[in-house]
Image (tube, rainbow, N blue to C red; front, top):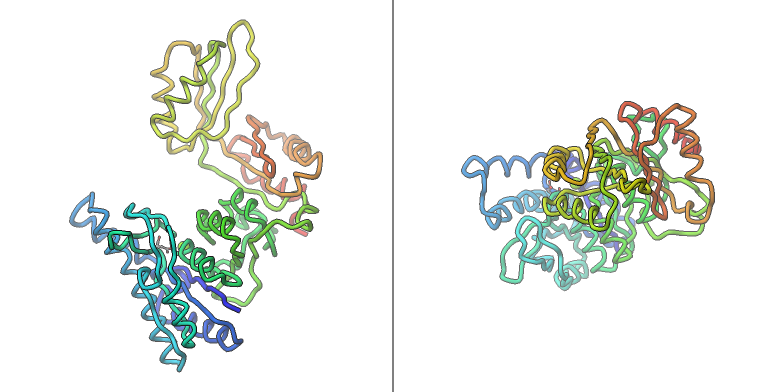
Length: 401
Ligand code: ASP
Ligand code: MG
């Protein structure tokens, strides 16, 4: 088998931990698999380099930032290769370019366009453990590029795809994906398996484990990800293709997003084009609108509500206030949150949403907005009930067992 391992910043955070990773890789190699390792920079390193650059300029040129930031991953890759060789193993480190990773030329946020795996293949064939510096590639014009924060996960998945690896194991300090945030619900359980789509919807639960873009890419390439801890020996959580078994489970996890603000417009003129005008104005300012509800009009007036990220609330407010005409009154509420239940089982089972609404009703929590997709029901509620709602829903779908 060919397995790609990816170790995050905490897992390679100091020399002792790099040695720990070397030992784990050595063990995997002993089992007879071919191993390609993708590494992040040591934790804090990328931020430190950004601070260094900001010492000279608040707007350092992006090309130079890529030269600078890509060095963090190169340090870890070479140190790990040295550690492996010192243990008597054959290992070789590679930069993104040496690993054949070709990207767009959008510095600091490049996209991987293609991977030429020839170098990696021949190094593997010679019996090497290949250690690749994550988060980086080379543009067509020969410049070093980086892939955006958390981009080593993306490197690992793309490499796994290009090498047709059997799995991409992503190691962090967390042993998998949980049914909800264990800091809110201590009874949260590690999941054994979750589909790509569920993982994407539950992004907030995986935020510390893997980058969302890498899940999208894994889905596209059909790469199976296994999220594991580099500090223990569990099986982790498999993130892969949806299966029939999974549909038996109604709800897989509960996500909470506190970064929400609600805007309610009352007495909006009920005529064609108003919604278009409002949301075009918001889009012009690059404000991401999440949920939208509009009531049936009465007396040529209607009510319209929507949510935006809390951090964009003030800007949204300004735009709406400038709007003036065609709206009677506006109400802003920053203290709301979004609770979501996610599960592929919803596709084939009725009543899943009703259970959520009943559960919140039993706790006397008012639902201010609702939106649904095929595998998700999201509810906007007062932020003070966030934790209560998460725990109640976790119980209602029996996720602790
Ligand atoms: N070192 C980069 C970052 O901190 C990439 C990564 O760790 O995945 O964002
Ligand atoms: Mg990371």
